[in-house]
Every structure is written in structure tokens, then in C-alpha cells.
Length: 250
Image (cartoon, rainbow, N blue to C red; front, side, top):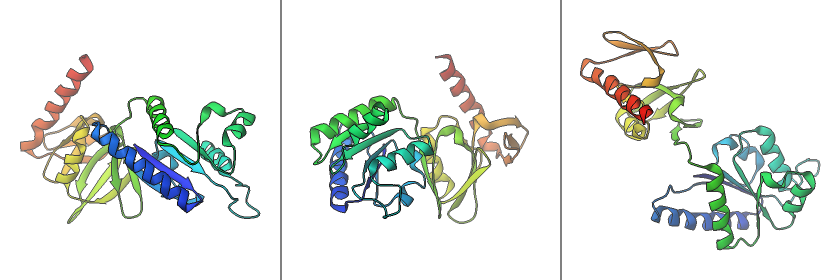
């Protein structure tokens, strides 16, 4: 799970991180996915891409500035809901009673609540509730470029190809792309979590679901791009399609 901790009190922020890291270790020991934890002390950084997080823990005790309309953590939560695509928000009350604020605003059920100092059992209960709300999470692959990071699901990836020494350009849906520091072999190993992705040469890989046509030495993707297919790799496309067809029949 990807988790963000937003707190303007650095000591509280570090304590929440420590508690979450212990829970992450527990999850790993139980064979579950570990936690990716990011920590923020200012809103600007948090608001860059909050949709990537499965859970956001929030407490802001003091206004951003005297003239700011962000007076406390509840205002931060409202900004996140306005941004859209937010999964779970956990309000951590210290100075402010966020549960009462949410009740008065008629949105009590949209968030979860903890009181500081956070107790381990209460945190465990919150994490369990978040898991239930998330259901079976869609697998995402972290694509980290020089200036941005994209968390891609399988269908986001159209194809990828080598772009020079230790650089791979990943072409995504919605006319997006990102260049990552990697090689095609390492990227393909990461993509084995995706059933529709396969290599088509020593320099390229594709998502079979995005193929619209095939010729002797290439495939055309639904983006209009043509990707060369080496003869020894041509059987990979048929093999993946058979597997996908068998999955759909189950």
C-alpha cells in the first residue's frame, strides 16, 4: 500500500511514520504487501499527486499563514476531496476534533478517525478497515523518471523501448510517456505482474491488449505506433493471447 503522512508537527509526523513502518514489517511477515510511506509537512508537496495514495493520514494544528483559508487538517481533507480520486483519509485529532467537524459538515462516513497519541491497536483497526474499503487492490508499477513518478496499472502501459544506454521510454495511454533509468530486461522483470505484457525484441516490449494489427515484422498499437517484432519473439504474442483467453473462460 502507498501511504502518505501529512502533519505540521514534525515530532508527531515522525512518530506516525515509525508506527506505520512497524505495521509494514508485520504485514510483510504475514505475506502481505509492505507499505510505501511518504511524509509531508506542507500542502504544496502533498497536493502534487495525492491520488497515488491508498491512505492519507492528516493532522494540521496551525494555519498555513494568517491569511490562509487552510486553518486545520479538516480544510486539507476538503481540498483533497475537491481534487478527486482520493481513497482513504484518516484524520488524526490532537488540537482539533475532526470527527465532530466532519459530523457537522455531514461527511462523517467519508473519513476515518484516530486520536493522538496513536495507539497500536487502534492503528491496526484503521488499517484493516482501509483494506476492506480498498478491496483487492489493482497492481501498480512504479515508473520513476527524472522529474516525475507514475504509478501505472497494466492497461496504462502500451509499449516500451530502449532509448540509449540504461534508458527506457514507456509509452502510456492518454498520449503520455515517461523515460526511466533502467534497461528493458529489468523493466520486463517488473512487468511480470502484468499478464498482457511480453517482450517482442531485445529492445522492446508491448501490452498485447493494445495491439490492433500485426504484420510480418511489426505490430501496430492502438496509439498508431509501430513496434518492431524480432522473429524469435513472435511466438510470445500468441502465447500471451492464449493465456488471456484461458483466463477469460474461467
